[in-house]
Amino acid sequence: MAEGVRTGYNLYDGQRDTSREVLQNAADAIRRAATRRSTELVLDHGFPATTLPDAVGRLDALQKLTLFHTGLQSLPDSLGQLRQLRHLQVVGAPDLKQLPPSLTRLSNLRTLQLMMTPLDELPADLGRMQGLRNLTLGGGHYARLPASIVELSRLTELRMVHSSHFRELPENIGLMQGLRSLEVTSNSKLEQLPGSLTRLHRLEKLNLSSNRRLAHLPEDIGQLRGLTELSLKHCATLRQLPDSVGDLAQLQLLDLRGTGLQTLPQSLARLPAQCDIKVPEHLADQLLQIRDPERAQRQAQRAAQQLADRRRRAPVPAAQQAGSSWNRVPEFTRVLRSLDADLGERFEKWTRGLEQNATMFGASIASADMPLLDQVVAEAIRSPEFRSSFGQFLSDHTIKTLNMDGMTQVGGRGPAVRGDARTAFSEMLKHKLMHTQNHETALGLLQEALQNPDLGLSRERLLRSRNELTGRVEMWPPLKAYISMHDEEGEAAQDAATTWAMAQFAEAQEGVIGDAEAKQESERAQANANRFIEQRARVLLGEWDIR
Image (cartoon, rainbow, N blue to C red; front, top):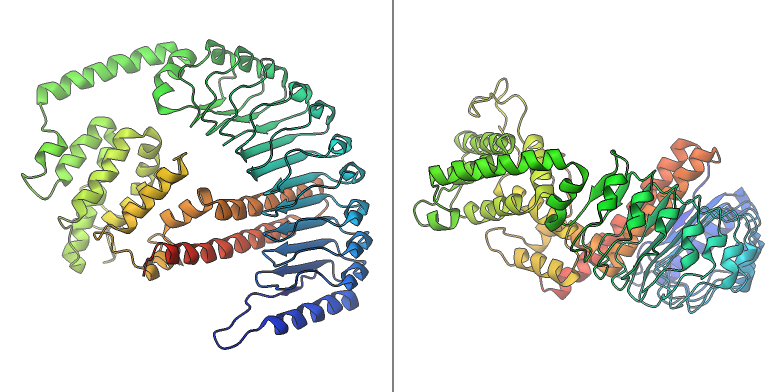
């Protein structure tokens, strides 16, 4: 098993500056790694040095080097002496502008990840690194990739993400015939794709999400016959799809949510029946009409019948009943039943469980819960996606031994359901934040919740909220969703962890490392990301004056 060496978490322990101590620990760790011929070295969170000692180049057994959120301003040229190095991860080095020329001499390097690192440029001879399989770049200040990148004949995965400077892919990217996965996401200045992209005949996954200025796809994108996944999520200026999309005979996933599409091509009917096509909600009916006309007709007839039935019953709209009684649970149940009978039944069972909890433990449903539940039900009406996840939430939070009448628990005297109206609201807000494209809109939703007195969200509760299912203490889910998906630094940290984990599992599939080691690496990468997201949360809560 690879021996890991860690060092450095904080520079100030509340009483004294620990920078010198951390530096000494790092030097000792490097010496131990050399003596023990360690295969792995990790320097993260709190490593204050502006560079690494030249001695790092003498770690001739080193296979993995991770530099995660450090103060590094440069890397030593001796880095090129690490002939056995297979994985190099540099994430969150805000002062690192240049890479050492010797980097491209790392002939055995398989995975290179440079994220949240504002490099002015990449090595012109990057194409020398013939061992590279996975390359992830993000946060750089370069507008384009070096021309030699197309010479990376063994590269199977290329990711270019989270850059406000990147403008274009190589015009001859079609020469990279080894590519299986191409991810070019969240690049605010990328406006078009090279025509040769459609010559990547072995490409299986193409992710172009969140490129806000990307307005067109190559007309012959259907030439990517091996493609199984295509994501255009949050490409807001994309107004139409080429008809050739229907020629993607192997496609299993097509994500069009958050695009500017106002209509869908009829060619989508030619896609495999098992292809999961995700569209903006206003196009859901058109998609059904294209993919399954008979079902669309039956659904339209059923909707018309339900509308006629509701008109005969003439229910009073929720908004008009607000003053008649503070307890609107029966009204919410009726509304949900009219949408989905099973969802309405689950909701009724859950709310009756809340009443049973009140009888047993004294915490009753209050009038302050009604506005929260109103927003939850409104989102269920608006969003079919949330309707599905809310149904799962209700099932998960209802004790399975509760009788179908919702009042009698079979065996034991514990709570009938888990959570309360605030838990349901948290689930709803998390879902909205995860499916909201505009970062400002997401921030507005979150801050509105933070200021809601009915939620009682103190700084401590936001950072240390109890998970009603697991009992574990964790960050309030909507806050974590916002930071990992809408805060630039948090999103990049989560992305880096995901990428690193995917690279390790790819190595496990190839038999280079074991499944257990890949799992361990994945968990460690996620722990690093979680630690950074928590640090970022503390900073943001301070900026928002949340006490």
